[in-house]
Amino acid sequence: MSALIVTDERFFAEAGLSRQTAEKITAEALHGMDDGELYLEYSQSENFSFDDGRLKSASFDTNQGFGLRAVAGEASGYAHAGELSESALRRAATTVRAVKAGYQGQMTAAPAKTNRTLYGDFNPLDAPKFEQKIALLQAMDEFARGLDHRVKQVSISLAAEWKAVQIIRADGQRAADIRPLVRLSVSVVAGDGQRMESGSYGGGGRIPYDACFAPEYWQNAVREALRQALVNLESVAAPAGEMTVVLGPGWPGILLHEAIGHGLEGDFNRKKSSAFAGLMGQRIAAPGVTVVDDGTIDQRRGSLTIDDEGTPTSRTVLIEDGILRGYLQDRLNARLMGMKPTGNGRRQSFAHLPMPRMTNTLMLSGTQSREEIIRGVKRGVYAVNFGGGQVDITSGKFVFSASEAYLIENGRVGAPIKGATLIGNGPDVLTKIGAIGDDSALDTGIGTCGKDGQSVPVGVGQPTLLIHGLTVGGTEV
Image 1 (cartoon, rainbow, N blue to C red):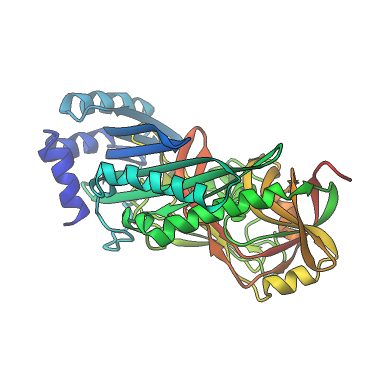
Image 2: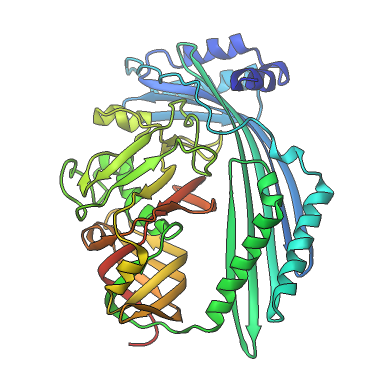
């Protein structure tokens, strides 16, 4: 069944709102504007939390509403409501038209249509049954505790969402999408004497629950979380100072996402608040560095068939062989910058305005093997996993903490280290990349990105990378 048919039933047949009325009010509200849309959304979500050998919480939520946006020049008028009714929509239309205030614009052409689908329209909340989900969490807890006597605590979370959206434009053109999403995460605390350390692993995507329930999947997740905890039990104090850092493939791409990706979003560059503003066509990274944002990868956490403005997602080349080639664009910033939308207009929900956001952002592979890269390092740090971090978009400065890292001494990976933080500047780091591995990979499906108070699911990735002269914050000089 097509997404338009499913969403027509949800928003019009079941909610009681007339589609013809919604289209008429939208057209009237957006007359004389440069852009805008009616965004309709319905979502179901559930979350299970298992801790200390018992179910700690279980929740189920439904949300439904609309957001009506009118764009005049750089200004946006926005009104939203959790009620799908003609009266609520008319009140919203009156509100958003205030942004016009004598302005006369010309409506930007509607997005191209697509018949492509990147994921199924199944609802992951429908199966397995509630009892089976609880049984999975219990089995994971028991499995973890049976692997090693040093396991002291096991925390597991299981979450799923089903979201239906429809976008109506002033000319009556409509686009719709059905978006499933699941995630399974496990954290293990291991103790040996007076010392306690933790490890974690998670994964998921726009897939059915079935993948998470496969024993080989969840057992691997538990083993990986325990492995990381046991590695950290053996860790020594991290060194401090400027040194060579090797980043592992996959999830360490979160550093790329935060320190570089946000700086390539259209709004920051239009307002010239990004460190990359005005550098289109110039070299901003070492030769061989190619970075893309790809929202078209099947079933990935950050993928979308269409963005939240109705534009089909795309594979956007941001940096090509070190040269800045593109920005991530929503419709508003693309129009004001004289560029094309890239399908990166995203919003957290119907209560939020869309803005340019990343989907799956990754650096492509180079030619060297991981082993070859590490052999060339006399003394440095090998960072495999990351925890939290902070970045300043304007300056590009960042600080990231490594949750799993090792010393590199004389070309070999040595002792695990604890308390390592990586400190640097995104634009500067791009020029210090000395080697690019042949093993580019996306993360396992755990990324969530925050911007201006909105959170959206994303993917990150990269190959093994060697970076010269990165500052490492630690406890030992």
